[in-house]
Amino acid sequence: MITWDNFYLFATVSICLWLTGAISALRSSGQSKIAVVLTVAGITCLGIFIAGLWISLQRPPLRTMGETRLWYSFFMGIAGLLTYIRWKYRWILSFSTLLSTVFVIINLLKPEIHDQSLMPALQSVWFIPHVTVYMFSYSVLGCAFIIAICGLVHHKEEYLVTADNLVYSGVAFLSIGMLLGSLWAKEAWGNYWSWDPKETWAVVTWMGYLLYMHLRLRDRLRKKMLYVILIFSFLALQMCWYGVNYLPSAQQSVHLYNRNN
Image 1 (spheres, rainbow, N blue to C red):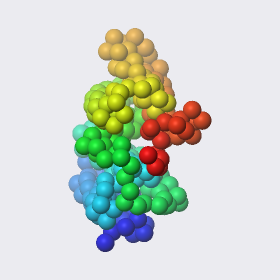
Image 2 (cartoon, one colour):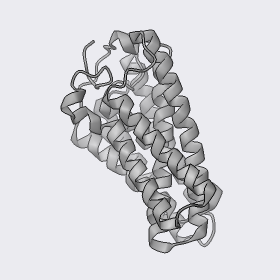
Image 3 (cartoon, rainbow, N blue to C red):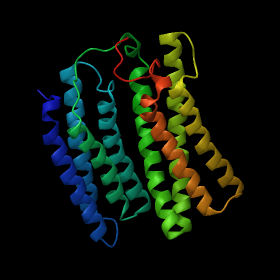
């Protein structure tokens, strides 16, 4: 049976496959089929662990911060791979691998207690789609963040076009996640929206990306400033994801991880 004690084995294999795939992509003059196969193998390995952990816990592994980091690493690998296949940036797998690896290592260094308990609010049909859609949107917007950093350095027009597509896709999933979350909140707490810290930062993040889309479509700012907006929007996303957990005002939030109610 797969448990969290086995995570280091799956993590090691996944990271090795991702790193080898990223190196293969960098060395190739075009799109490397070997890089694609190795990256898919790494994603599959981590996916097997997630599925096995789900079975052993008898609940979706989405409750704790460590479990959401696990999903982020998984989806980051997918987002990086899709970006590589679509736009053929040889370096994108290196950056997506770096982000995935960072979150995997954090989970290795900060092991958590994973039990079968699931608070009543999480025993909802909206729980799984809300969190997984959010994690996927975070990974796609993570790739947009990587592109924005590269755009600031290299000033290539093609990077902005790529960022556009990633932002449009990421915001679409982000919006769906917010809608699912509001339906969940209505079922669990009686209100669609309560403006607690996490919900407030969710709106700040959403508005940041909408601002980018609005200014981009109207061509109101220089490319450099557009990249800066993307970077700050991604930092707001990180605050929404886990930063709010450390705010004093969030200690009574219904969104605080590891609460027992």
